[in-house]
Amino acid sequence: MLNWLKNRLAPAGKNPRNAPYVLSSKQHPISPRDISKAAQDVVAALNDAGYQAYVVGGCIRDLLLKTKPKDFDVATDATPEQVKDLFRRSRIVGRRFQIVHVRMGREVIEVTTFRAHHQGNDKQAQQSKQGMLLRDNVFGDISQDAARRDFTINGFYYQPQDNSIYDYANGLADLKQRTLRMIGDPEQRYREDPVRMLRAVRFAAKLGFDIEPKTLAPIHKLAKLLKDIPPARLFDEVIKLLMSGNGLATFHLMREQQLFQQLFPNTEALLIEDPQQLEFIEQALINTDQRIRSGKRVTPAFMYAALLWPVVVKHSQQFLSGGESPAYAWQHGANLAIEQQLPRIAIPRRFTNPMRDIWSLQQRLPRRAGKQAERVMGHPRFRAGYDFVLLREQAGEDLEGLGQWWTIYQEADETKRQDMCTKLHSGKKPGRRRRKRGPRRKSGNPA
Image (cartoon, rainbow, N blue to C red; front, side, top):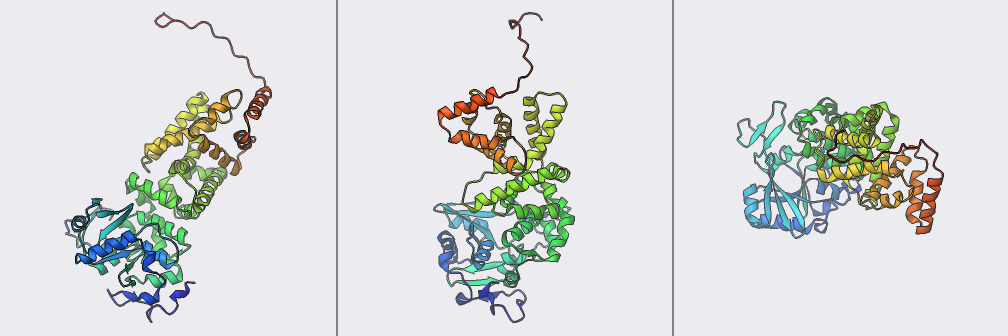
């Protein structure tokens, strides 16, 4: 229960039409000190130039819930061009939805212009046959902008100068009830931007809120619309979904609403077939959540390597059963897994290359005899490959103590390391003796 919210709502719990419910400075827990100085400076500069401007959206929601926002956004009645003219260190980004990035010191403040509903003949608006907004630059006033925001709890406008909050969407009531509710008709809003379905499950998992039934109902039916979202945009969305400290809860909600299968169809098929693979993915997300909450570094490469590992294993085993060598099978299994995933999510090469290294190390780490262990530990991705082995063992895979061996090896001195490798070599089971090759023919000689 949010104690400060008691007796803070309008008597009927509703706003008058197009009018906000206003909380004065004494009616809420936010102080201007809680707001980024850069965001305050942007608002002040816009106000001084004669424009309306407010700190908006999720940052105000988080402060009302007494959690620390990740960033601060500003909304204004100034057009993108007017904002850009006002701030020297700024640039307009986006075509579908124009925003201005204003740089203040080390911080970048995202400034959006108040949006309005489309009239059907607007030159600055364009929709697909499915209803998805391909261009959305119809500008309006603050009340119209509030109606265009996604969820009621994101419809707050904060004015730093007098420390007041304007609630246009009855978001305070939903905060009190811990409810996630779409503004407007949910199906229409999802069709306008299918990514809103991902945002719904992300916010529900992050905040521990229930998704209001009418907001939840269309998601299952419309999940397939995610196929129309550009793969590059979905890469960024997956990072927000699974690398924000609530990845496991988000993953479960995504699977329940058939959203995960739209993003990772091959992985989802294998999770249904093999519970062991599901346990592996869940453990990867548990570990990621723990690292994020502890302030430790996480990388998209490791997370994506885990999400696609079941697919890599399947393809590699198919190549092996077809008679290919292990090196070929695992290399091409990895390549095929990435190749099949890229049409859905455009994973940049700066992450796919480390992913391949992590997978390759799963075949190299078991080979430790002689000088092999020393060479493997010198690999630039050794630590990630080692952590991946530990993850596999945590998920119940029997690797014959491989993770523990490498844990001891890293902490041992040179003498003990040599002894460990010697014991491995001496304990090796005898295999078939290799046939000695004859002298290699010189190039150019006939066979």
